[in-house]
Image (cartoon, rainbow, N blue to C red; front, side, top):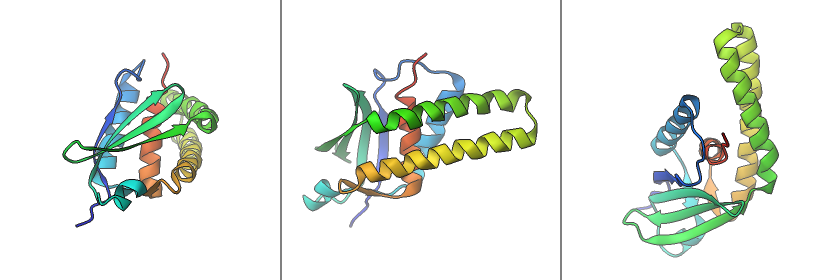
Length: 160
């Protein structure tokens, strides 16, 4: 019976260079939400007869995003490698708006926080669309899954 979803996700700890409480919270929420509800169907693995669920490990190697996909039993299925050049600007913008958001929470009015949050969501949505475009022909997924994956990609790019 087909179950095209991510059942477990892992981030390469060696890739994550810096953390703080806000970032750890974002990571935990994104992983929890992703595991609870996602659509993830790697096409080569499906064509080879594996219908999920999948375990996914994300890392950045040589400036590229590596998505290592395994079966539930740990059998390696495939590794997708995506260039990150097109993600640099959205990641930079997302970090900047998140920093503004975290600062605003501490001292801004509710309307100012809402305005910044709307901008943050817009950047996040644009980056998610870019991720969907980059995964096209490799993985079938949906927008909410792409949004959560983009959050985790950002966690892998944090520099102290």
